Every structure is written in C-alpha cells, then in structure tokens.
Image (cartoon, rainbow, N blue to C red; front, side, top):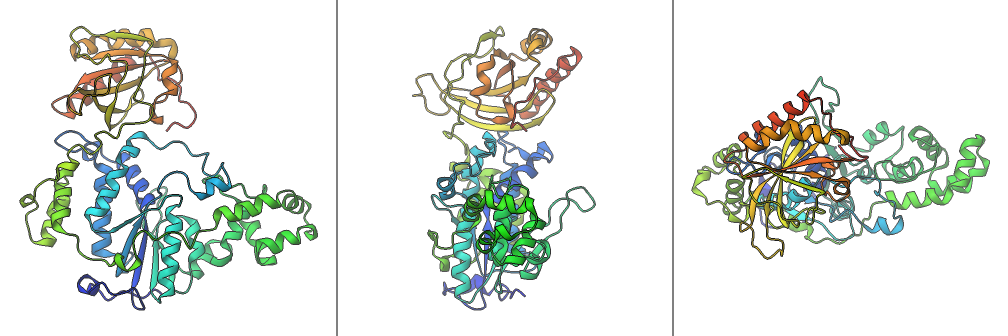
Length: 501
C-alpha cells in the first residue's frame, strides 16, 4: 500500500534529501502532452483559441489545468512530496540503434503539435516542476532511473502515465497510476487505476511485474513496432513465461514444446525474441539531468507563473490561481516571450512550396511568393473539405525579413476530388472575390511536401490565402460558405493518403 506524504509539509520544508516517508511522483509528460492535445482537438473549437489573436492554446490550457491538479489534489488521493515531469527528447533513442524499425511505423506528429511542444515545456517550468529529458533516452527510461534511485533511498514512488512498459518497475514501494479517461457511460471510458504488483498480475494473466518484460518481448507491440514472435499473443506468452520462468529458459527449451506451431515459431524467431526483450527493457541507469532532491514539490513562483498564464490568456486559470495566491492575476504583467509563441519555429516542408497554377483574385493581397519562411500556428476546424487552417507570418523570399515584417495571413487547404478541380474553382470563385482571397491550385507534388500530415491529399487541391482577419469568427464563416458551395456543386473531398487522420 502506498504511503502518503505528510499533507503539505513538503511545501515548507528545506531541500532535504529524498528518503523514507517521501512520495516521489514521476509523470510521463509526453503522454499528457498528447492526451491533452487530442482532448482539445475533440472539444469546443471556440475554447481552443486565444481571444486576442486566435492562437490555438486549448491543448496548453488543458495541460496547465492538469499541472495545477497535480499541485492541489495529487494523484488519486496521494499527495507527493517530490514531483518531476519527463519528456521524450526526440523520436529517436538508443533503441533506434538496436532496431532501426523501432517506432518507425508511427505517422509523423501533426505540425501544429510539433509547433506547440516548446510551450508544453514552458508550462512545466512556469509551474515550477522539474522538466526532465535527455538525449538518446525516452521518458520511460528516465522515469525508471529516478524510480530506482528514489526507491533505493526508501521513498515510495508513483509513476504517472499509461505506458504498459512502466509496469515492469512496480514493486513493494513502486506503483503506477493512470487518471480517469473519458466520460462515464460512454464508449472508451476508463476509470482511474492504481497498479501494485497484484494489480499488474491481474491485468496480465498472472504475470508478476518482474517477468512482464519477457511477456512483452514474446507478444511484441504494434504501437512501438516491437516484432515479438509471430502467432504468440498475451495469453500464450504469459502461460509460457509462467511455465518456464523467463525468456531465456523458454528459448533454451523451445524444442521440447509439444505444440508444433509454438515450437517452430520460437525456434525460428529466437533472436527476434531476444531483440524484442532488449527493446522493451527500461534503462535504469540513464542520466539524471535534474538531481532527485531538487524535485521537492513547492508552490510555483507567482512572478513566473502569472506572466505565463496572462500571456496565454487563460482567464479561468488566472482567477483560480489568484484565489490560491490571494492576488489579482491582472496585477502581474504578461510575459512577452509567449505573445507569439511559435514565431520562428517553422514547420517541416512548408518553407518552399511551389504551385502548378496561380489564380489570384483581383485585389487580393500579395501572397504569391514562391518561398515562404514562416511562423505557423494551426486553427482547428473540422469540415469535409477543410481540416483546420494555418496562420502564417510570410517573410520575404530571401528569408531576411524579421517576423512581422512580411505578410501575415491565413493559409487554407481545401481538399477536392482531382477530377473536379475546375468545378470546385467555379463554385468558390464568387466567395473568393467577395472575401478578397487569393487562391491557387496545388498540383500533385504538393502532397509530398506538406509538413502537416492532416492536410496531405492525393491529386489536386485548392489553397486559399487571406489577410489576417480582425477575428477568427469571420474566417470560420467564410470557410463555412466555401464548404457549402462545394457541397452544392457536388464536389467531393479528395482521397486521403495513408497515415492521414
């Protein structure tokens, strides 16, 4: 049973070494980053935009609300004394060197999420939590290393996330926790879960945590592209490990297995099983960029926290924090670093787009530059022909213009059936002219150069440009008219390519 830290005593104590009586919470920040991004994308679009400029701050807002929850309520009633938040440094790790196919089956993350990633880390720092990552290591490896160190000092450890690999670490003083997910009564709902060794065994066909890596190696993992042994699933893997004790003993005795299918698969794929075992094994001696003792949980510095919250225009969060600190959030300045948080970040594949045809509307703003070096932020919108749109700061073709000195505007990709491009153009031309848009017909080569996989299309599509609007709502109305005109003309969206949302 997990021991609770002494209420809020850790908030006032000196930076004493981690030891018995402490509860160290180790949070998979990469997991929560993706979860809040997708929660925001599925929510009310109007709540996902910063009021002043339409910047998509919904995922950051939900992430910050979760960070505040860590501080106020802890995890399922457990109040930690120490807390660190861990991120994957990049998509590659030392496992990619062992097996180049590791996670290679995953699609590229959405460009708008990539642009937001620095802000998730900024949010962690604003709340005063340890923000921890290390080159060549995944968040799970760092969590395993810190968990091992804290447990060795007699502290209790609570690993927070949903990655099954972390369950290998569960033991007498190490636990795993995942928050409630979804809405009760609806499909996909899952209650909060606390895993001790008994809960791990119950969830994995009787497998104890210390043998879970052997089961994972045998069954493989499609999500991470861990190969495993063909034809062996969780139940069979758990049964074999229970019978033989561990993977190596099983492989050494594979020729004695009576079932020919299992025997032949294990004999043929023994080395693949050993490779898979190395891939699922967590590194427990990774670097520790932040000392364990420095993870002591305390209230954030208001001179750092409030300027971040104000810049992001999180009004509810500002009021809530103001009540906790007994101050007015508005009495603090807005941190100018976050006024344009994705400026200069760019987006892969969006720096040198060329088009097969340029069809500018009369009087449209001059966005016809062949080369666009830009800052980018994505605006969520879900329609049949339009799946979000992008706001850009277009700089000059020689890339020497500073942000804000080029042309600002919206860039909208409109998916249409390749055989109906002319009909689509005729249908939207009146709207293009009235709204003073510039339109282009993008050729097939564009599909291979767009950085945001959610907009990749086979065949041709239309690309619309517009001057920055005084409010986001106006452009939503314009795009709704575009969608309606295409539907009325009987123009269907173009086919999605593999990997698209």
